[in-house]
Every structure is written in C-alpha cells, then in structure tokens.
Length: 120
Image 1 (cartoon, rainbow, N blue to C red):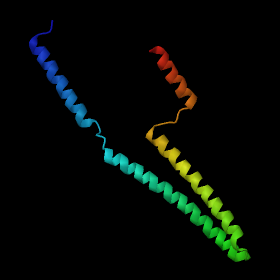
Image 2 (tube, one colour):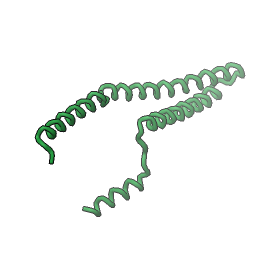
Image 3 (spheres, rainbow, N blue to C red):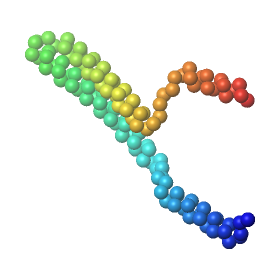
Image 4 (tube, rainbow, N blue to C red):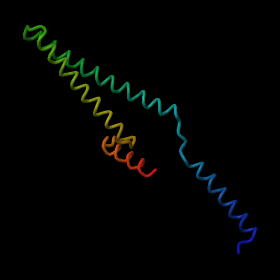
C-alpha cells in the first residue's frame, strides 16, 4: 500500500515534470507563421517577375541584334513566364515538404470520409 506521504511525493514529482515539459516545449507564435507565409508569397512573386524580366531582356536583345522587333521579345517573355511559374511551383512544393504537410490523393480522402460515415 502507498502511504499518504508517498502519494504527496508522487504528486509533487508529477507537477515538477509538467513544469519541465512546459519550459522545454516550443511555443507557437501565430504572427511568425503569418510572416513565413508572407515571405513565401513574396519569394514566389519575385521568382515570377525575375523570369519575365530575364525573358524580356533576352528577347529584346535578340530582336535588336537581328532587327526583328516583336518576334523574339514575345517568345522569350512567354518562355520567361513559363520558367517563373515552374520555379514558383517548385518553391511551393519545397515549402510544403518542409512544413510536413502533403497533398493526399482526392480519391483516398473521399474513401476515408465514406468509411468514417459508415462507422457512425
């Protein structure tokens, strides 16, 4: 049998353990999360604009060099846009993997929901 003194010691120990866990556990800052999202958004915008500007520069340079004004400009702006979008998607995938969330197959989600509804 456990005496009252031993029970009191166990309660005190549990209380100290909880205090130690609270001191160690990282505190989530919602403002920091929103800043991370804003940084990601700006990064993606900059990547898209950089792709467009590089495409514009190359196209304008080639048009000036060959004397064909709109042809290379239009082609390389479109190529720069495609490269910018591809880079944006790669950055979004990288950030998604870093945060630990993954996009599940919609069919898998639908099956899981249907199974949950059947259990009720």
